Image (cartoon, rainbow, N blue to C red; front, side, top):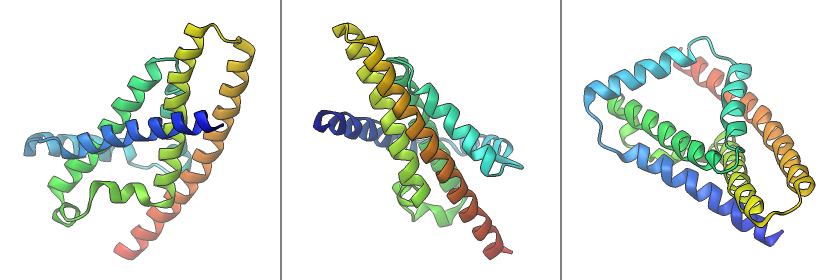
Length: 171
């Protein structure tokens, strides 16, 4: 169990580092406008089910042995890049730490889920090289997939609720 928590921490750190890099990379105003426009198009008409679908597809792909680590890094970087672009377009976000969005209840749940998936991806590669039991690997992977899906559905409802509250405040 202690070893598992260690790998989980590494998965979370990998995601946070890639997110932080994406949030700090220098981008031109034109790029930030394009990223913001693409993001707004993607989330147009989204609800809690759309949020869940987006997050669970990303998380499930992070379980792929080895490749999932790369997907997690890419996802973290991309998420940070979106925050970066939004901050360049909206001066109120410039004074907020990029990590602030991640300390929301849904942010913490998503980071935990992504860290769990990234770490399992790395562990699967290790287990494959060690030729450990397929049944055991499959058992733990399925348990963790159920945990991630469960957490992400709750996180999506919390995120959507917070979005609706913010929309009501801004009216």
